Picture 1 (cartoon, rainbow, N blue to C red):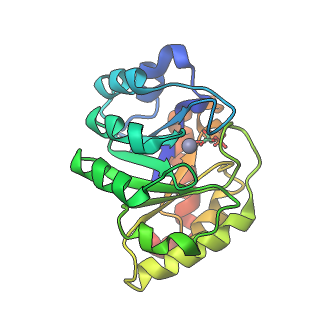
Picture 2: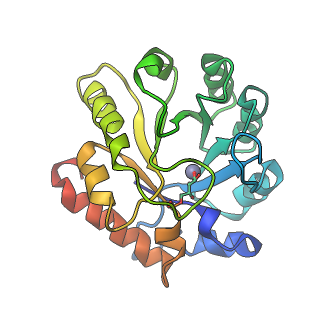
Length: 226
Ligand code: DX5
Ligand code: ZN
């Protein structure tokens, strides 16, 4: 799966930017549209919030993947699920009661995602992850697009892939940060299911074509995973 991140899109033309990666007769298109919510508190940057997500939800049929880089997700995450996001991801470093947050997100009808910053270990959260649908492994420090991929986080991807493949865990494995034609194969080989890509999609002349090219590269790295 490919999830273009609108962080690298033109914020004044979000509906058109979503349409540029949408499925069409000859293209599978984006599987999810990744929406980076930043509060200038949990991360230094500030982006957008619930009103924009609500409007975007009405402007596109692509399932929205909301990545909340905010403090106190215990309070705010459920609103994004109620606004119609398909998947709502919170940071484990920010959540007070991550199991409670997952319960609230799911009760509001969305999938629940848990994200780990590059330096956050996986082991302490394996039990918590049983309450989640998605694990988002950050491969850059959250806050900005266009940063260099950190290959060392792939150890976490390999570990969770093994647990999923042996039936010990049931999560979709997503990666976010520095994914491009140069890095997506290594991430695919490590076992990623869903690749977030901001600058590699919206920095391209044809964002729709970039989505297909990234997917093909991932697929060719692991033909048996399809
Ligand atoms: C970074 C965001 C990412 C960002 C990725 O904090 O979470 O989703 O858009 O951008 P690229 O793909 O350019 O690294
Ligand atoms: Zn993100």
